[in-house]
Image (cartoon, rainbow, N blue to C red; front, top):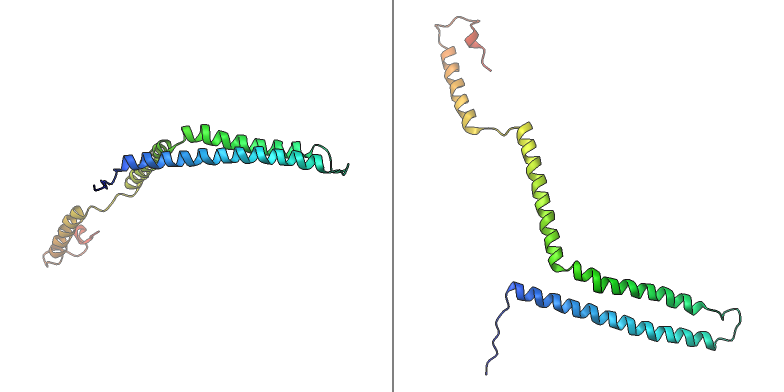
Length: 153
């Protein structure tokens, strides 16, 4: 029996890729939580086995508290932030920013075209042929020197 090696379309691949990344995030969060529990117990035990009165105190509570805050940030990132700012949100934001850039470019283009109009080649060529006709007429011997038609712009 042959396997059906159908290449999934882009949408299916993106859904698979998103699901795979979410599973990885949740797995790493669970690993972080287990490491937090083991580390907290280990710090508590180390604190109880140290007999030096200067070192003994509640240092382990501060270390566990800081670690708990970091774990809480990790939970918020995986559970809340990634749920609302996922791949679809990123795609929407990219599209919105590209549209915004295009609008700004169009506005700038209109401003530049208004302030510095482009050369109209056909119009300039037509004016050039008119000027060359005037030049030929100005060189004829029937015109008086100093005539207004002798001045060509």
